[in-house]
Image (cartoon, helix red, strand yellow):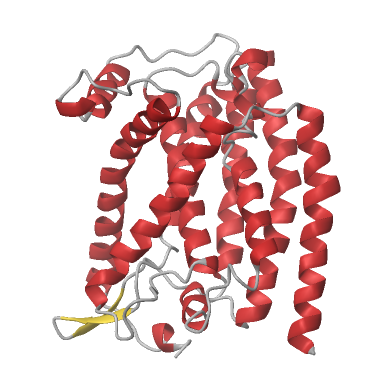
Length: 338
């Protein structure tokens, strides 16, 4: 059952259709996600969110896209031209690349053709995700360095230290799941959770992964990379117009990717506890609902917790999360072997 998704070949045109469909859905969700965040933050803070542009403020993303598109494209005279423009593009490419790995459903028979409801199902799924995450770090570092601003460069160096520190704990938290599932295929991990979702036996790893994910995506309370009270705006201080939107877009896509990976590895992916024989068309809906639960958690934490100091950020990552992740890995390995 675990290998069912890799024992067939899809026609090339199905790959193109799947890519367009996945990206079309995500690009449609992202603008509404910005409205959802601002509306939810407004409720948490006892105020209104966007309510002027369109019914209930739903056209606010369109107005902001028009606003940013009309802004003048500029860069500081001290910046490095090619790298200054390549950095946000690199961030977007790596973020979008992670979407191809999220399994939205099982293999289905559509018009007589077997189609996997995912972009690709590589045999080293988690390693692929971390490889893309490592490359995306260069988009942030190059953006800060190429801006020619000491504040931007300081923000990018903060990002380097933060991402390296928390990526270690995040990776170790996932190894416990891989040992339990005995596979590196993301669809195989979902199939392995038919008995019990892994957030139950791997609760410690799940909590470590989520905390590290907040730091990896630069979300509160770990948003020191762009701490406006200290760094003006962090690594993208000198960016405006479309390049700024590119960084903002990549940040939200990274949140969706993290939510999708957490859904796949810990919440059973497309599996749900109510139907023993789940119809195939409901698989993507189940995944999307679970991902939105994680997105709501991201917003909830932002409205609840204050930003940490930088020494607290590094101390928590190396002195608390890393030992806990290592202990979780050792305990999991001992239990599986025994």
